[in-house]
Image (cartoon, rainbow, N blue to C red; front, side, top):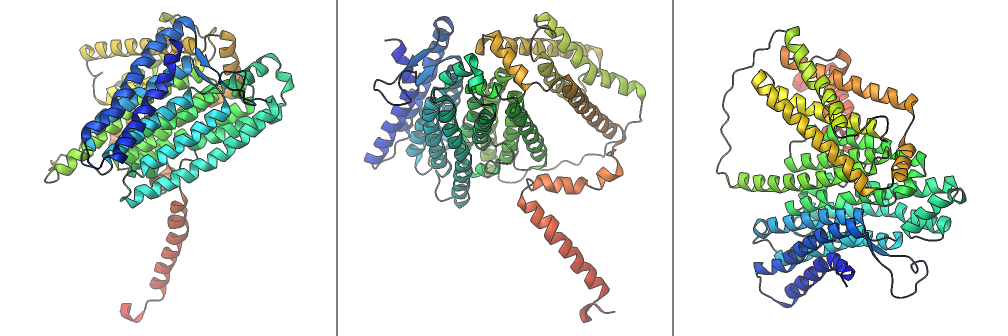
Length: 569
C-alpha cells in the first residue's frame, strides 16, 4: 500500500489543477483563495517526494506496470520512481511550489487568475509523469502534453500580442524537434523490438553486438535533436529569447524546470548514448557552441529577463557538454543547482521590474571622477596572477586529496578538475577585483572560504555521482564513450587554458592601463562582433548589416561623388 502512495506525487498536482479549473469554469465570481487548490497539493507532492527519496535509497525503486495487456507495454514497468526520477520530481515540485507562492500576490488582479494556477498545477503533474515514465512511447506522449501546457501558459494573457506570437513560435520549434524524437521511436522499435528503456539498456549491456552501430547512432542523434529543441541548443534556440514576454512566474518555471527535460532525457537514455561515441562527440560540440553563443549574447543584452534567458541557454550548453563528456551525474547536479538559482533570479527580477515601475522618476546619477590608470607594476601583477590562476588549482588538487578522490583512479576526474578550475578562477578574479585579497588579514579568511567551498562542492559532486549511478562499471562506460583520447583532449585543454589566461591578461591590462589592449585586427571587428551577438546572430543581423548597410554606404558615396542641385556650392 505504501508503494501506491508514490502515484500521488504526479496525481496530487493534476487533481488540484483539474479541480481548480472546474471551479473557475462553473463559478462566475473570482476568489484568490482558490489558488490554494493548486498550491497545497503541489507542496504535499514535494513532501511526499522527500519521504520516498529516503525510502528509495534504503529499499530500491518503486515501479508499476499496466493492469491490462497491450502490445509493447506489457511485461515491463511503464512507471518507475528511482533515484534519478525522484531527484527530478523534488526539483519540479519544489520550484513549482515556490513559483505558485510567489504568484499569489504578483498576479493578483490579473485576468484569468485562477486559470493560471490550474494550468501551473496540471503542467507540474505532466512534468512529473514525464520524468517517471520508463517507456519512450509514454514519455513522448507526456512530452507533447508538456509542450501544449507550456504554450497555454505562455499565451496566458491573450491581450499581449507579442506573448501569443512567442507561444506560437515556441510551439512550432518544439514540433520540429519532436519530429526527430518520433523518428527515434520508430528506429528504437525496429532495433530493439521494444520501447521500454530498461529493456533497451539490458540488450545493450548483454548483447551489444546484435544492435547495428549505424542504426544506433541514427537513433541517438534523433533523440538528441529532440532534446536540442526543448533545451534551447544552438541552432534550435531561437524560441527562447522571445519567451521573455510571458509572465515572470512562467519564465521561472520554464527556465528552472521545463528546459531541463532535454538533459533529463539524455540521462534517462544514457546507456544508449554511451554505446554511441560518435553521438557523444556531437553532443559535446553542440553543447560547446551553445555555451559560447549563449554566454556571449548574454553580455550584450540590456533587458534583465532577456539576459537571464541567454544565461539559461549558456548553462544548458554547459550541461550538454558534460553529457557529451560522459559526466551524466554532473549534468544532473548542474541542472539542480541551475534550476534553483535561476528560478530565484527570475522571481527577483520580476519583483525588481515591478518596483521600478512604481518609481515616480528615474534614479539620479552621481557624477564620478574618471579613474586614473595605475602604473604597470610586476609586483602587483604576480600576486594577482597567483591568486586567480595558480591558487585555485592548488586548492582543487588539495581538496581532491582531502575528499579521497584520486586523479589516477576516478574516471572523468580530470574533466571535472578542469571545469572546476575555470569556475574557481572566475570566483577568485571577482574577489580580486573587489580588492578582498589586497591585505593579508582579508586574504586568509577568503582563501579559507574558497578551500571549504571547493571541498564541499567536490565531495558533494562525488557522492552524487555514486548515488545516481552506483555501478562503477556503468560510470566507467560513460566516461570511456565520451573520451576523445589524450592525443586530442590535451590540445583542447591547452587551447582553452591559453584563451582563459589571455583573457585574464587583457582584463588585467585594461584595469591597470585604463584602455582595452587587443590586436588591431580584433579591435576593428569589435563592433561587428558586438552587433552580431546583440542581434542574436539571427537573420536580422545578416539582413541589416550584410545587405542594407553596404547599400546604404554605397548610396552615401554616390551622393558625395554626384551631388545634387540642393547640395551644390
